[in-house]
Length: 182
Image (cartoon, rainbow, N blue to C red; front, side, top):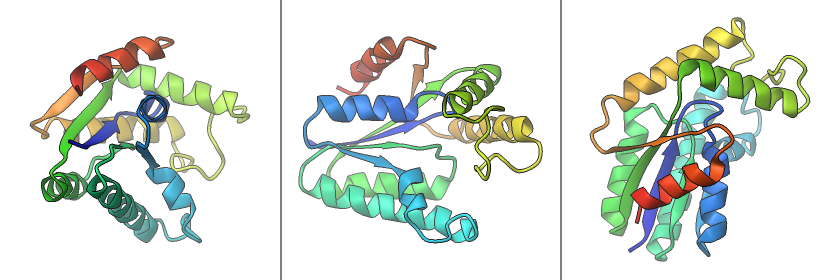
């Protein structure tokens, strides 16, 4: 049976890294990065109220096609909208696939620290990409508010699979993920 694996979690938790690792170890898995899809939509920043939901709809459509063919799909994204997760649930019912709703866990402060460190590694001296989603007044505050919004949403989800995100221990975190989705 094919699997739809959602890897959710705060900024800096390792979602994309784990999704890529899963896809590399499981042939023909479709790795969907919703942010990449969003950047493919023209004027996505100027039209963020439309491009955000549209990119998620496109991700679900891509997943549907792949799951119908019998292959796994892994999506790494911060999901905190009930309608998106309901779409994923319906998709798995429709395609007779298993849904794994994983959440990488770490503290607020650790999330902020990792996010800023990644930005610095990517060449942004203060850790924030100009024009990025949290680069609008109160940058650190925005990251922490997003963390709080995500944690509130997660507390409403009945089938969450928590996976501790251990800094510098990607292999251990990956093994924890694998042990919970077999």
